[in-house]
Image (cartoon, rainbow, N blue to C red):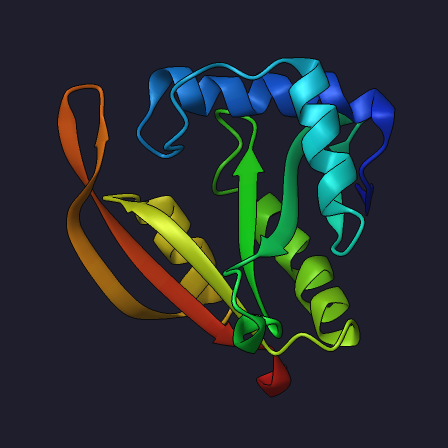
Length: 164
């Protein structure tokens, strides 16, 4: 088991994981498959300010986590949105929690104070992951998403990083 910063050799695996959720679920609100070049652009842009981590198990990328700017206004500068994705079939094995146990302290070390996670609902696995890692549900927006011809609810969970 190894959790480390994302490297260029990880882009294809990240692309494959992302595209599974884009093409087959409402978990991701993206609707067009990503290219490896787009993943590369996103990782480079993200890592200018925030960490992007990958979880390696037996030389296989099984998941990734990163933080990104939550809102544009300067008053939100101490808040980030967190994202965790696991390879299909890998949920429930502790990979997401392990990624958060590395990502969240790094965000705190960067001086950030609040982590926010948006979750397309229903998504029991993601809710459990976030609540097990100290996130609390703070909002529920019924039907704000539209994907695959259906309305999708979104919930927001928040964690105060100063609380540990």
